[in-house]
Structure formats: structure tokens, C-alpha cells
Image (cartoon, rainbow, N blue to C red; front, top):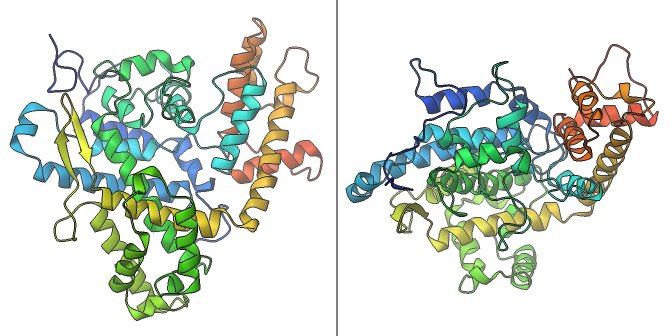
Length: 446
């Protein structure tokens, strides 16, 4: 009888659905390289992280964010493996750094143009067409690596290993299968066979250890790097938050009003005071871009990332791997969890809730909704202008027209929209609306 979560027996973590290859790389290193060289990964340079991509080089886009999540995740995995108890390493297969790195590189592939605001709009659009599974960026990421990305013409997708597919699954369930997280899911029924292949060594909704590590690396990178982005852009008043100021008091009042259950014994004021003591006087001034100030903000970022990777000597018990009964679990000190959540809340309070960003997002939702509507009307057999849909999506829709599968046509339209950068999305929208005809030589999607 095989062990479900322990050492290799039965199905192997390194198995692929279609073929097994060998060269000087490990199977997991090949996964990493396949993801890195996809068009979908390159596209992320044109997709919003928080602020609109292309607005300034200061802001992270989805590509630079994914690269840093991969770096943080890999280093954390290497560190955890160096300190794991022998009793655990003898009982379980330890997390592989390349699996974590691969999962991090792939985790945002499914984000549509304009990020989370478009994700919600697309979900509304898809469900309004009678497709109950709707749209979710994590499920779209899984669809991309298993079906849409191209590696070989003999099969669809990248043919990633079981372990890497499992690492990508931050939410290893379909829509409606986890009442604790009803707004998150990891796959559509169209990719159920790939999901079952990935999960053959796992039961229930439990995440693989690599997925747990990647998820924490994602939060750390998001919290720390957005703090840096918006302080340097003079949108987040870090200089005043580090002081006992009105800005700090206003934020703490907001935090108290929105307190979560897991923060019952958490005092964010103490954390901000500790953060102030860790910072130097140069950070308690508006950002000017002086070499000394740049060095100090980089030093603060390094300090925080080291702390949230659990390195020794950072004033808290280390993050570590523990035995969760039948699998490895990433134990995160609750203090560190709350600190990261507080940093994320700073970005939400000062940036995400601002009228300027909300106005942008209102317009972005309008673009997505209208574009989806136009494309859906042309994705039917009797459509007069079906030629506005570019290949290969038009070819796929024409094949479906013979059987009239609306759900599959809807999913192909979503695949088209999520294949574009924000510049391409706006360009196609303006062309279809007639506000900017563009160039005959510019096909927008290639």
C-alpha cells in the first residue's frame, strides 16, 4: 500500500502525463525552463500588479513580481531543507527548490489584463453566459500550463511534472468545493484529467508543501515590494507612518475597524513602532531618490525579507517544516503572518482604496465587459463579422460551431482575452469601438 504524502511509492512526483525525457537537467528544472520561455510568461510584463503597467518603471508588473516570488520561494526552500529535522527528511520527500520556483513563475500566468479588477468582471461575464464555473485567475493559470501553452505539437500544454502541477495549485479544488474559500478555486472541469493526475498522491483539499511555500513567498514579495514601490512613488507615506503621526493614527484606526479574527491578539501599533526603530532617519523623510535613501530602503527590504523567510537572529522563532500527521506543513509564526498582513493592508489602505485607482478600475472593467460582449456575439455560426476574432481562436470556434457548444466557445473567448497584454486589450477595444482604427499592418495578436 502506497504512502499518500510520504516518500516516493506508486505514482512519482517526476511523472509527466505525456512523455518522460532526460538530459542534464532534473525533471523539475525542465519544468522551470519550459514555463520561463512561454509567450504567456513574457506577456506578464504587460499586466498590472497593483498600479497600471507602463505608468512608471517604479511599479512592479506581474512579470517582475513573479520573478521575485520565484527567487524568494527558492531561497526559502533551500533554507528550510538545510534545517529540517532528520526524522522528517527520513519520513517525507523534502520540498524541491525547482518545483517551488516553477510554481512561482507560473502562478500568475492566468491573470487577465488589468489584474484583479478584470478577474472579477470576467467572472461576472462568464457566469452571465450560463457557465457556472465562471472565471478565476488561478484556474486559468492551470489551464494555460496544461492546455493552452505550446511545447510540442504532439500534445497540449507544457507537460509539466506531477509535482510542479501540484505546486501551482494554491487552491486544489473546483468552484464550490471548499466552503471556507468560496471565491477561490484552482481548476475548471475542462482540465479535470490534469488535476486528477496532479493530485493522485494527495487527498482532499490539502496543498502540497511546495504550494504552501510558494503562497507564502507570494505574500512576502507582494507586501515588501509594494511598500517600496509606493513609498518611492510618494503615494504611501512611509516617512510619516514611521513617526507618531496623524497618518499612523488614521491607519491604525482603519486597521482596528477591519480587524480579522486571526488578529485578535495582534497590536499593529507595536509592529509599526518596531519598524520605525529598524529604519534610519533618511527613511523618515519624503523620498527624494538620493543614493543614501535608496540604500536605506533596500536595506529595510532585505531586513524584512530575511525576517519573513525565518532566518535566525531576526527576533522570532523560525519558519519551519513540521509534521502534520500525514504530510509536511509549513509552520509560519503568527507574529510574522500578522506583520505581512499589516504591510499588505498599508497598500490596500493607501493605494487600492484611492479614488484615482478606483476610477482607473471602473474604466478597465468597462473595457473588459464590452470586449467580452463583442467577441461573444461573433463567436457563433451565424456571426457576420467572425473574422474579427484572430487565429488560432477563430479556428477553434469554427470547429465548435458544428456542435454548438456555448460553454466551450465562452471559454475560448476568455482564453483570447487572457492571452493579451493591457496595451493589446485597449488597442483591440478601440479598434472594435471605432475610436482608434489602428494600422492595417498591426494585427494586435500574433
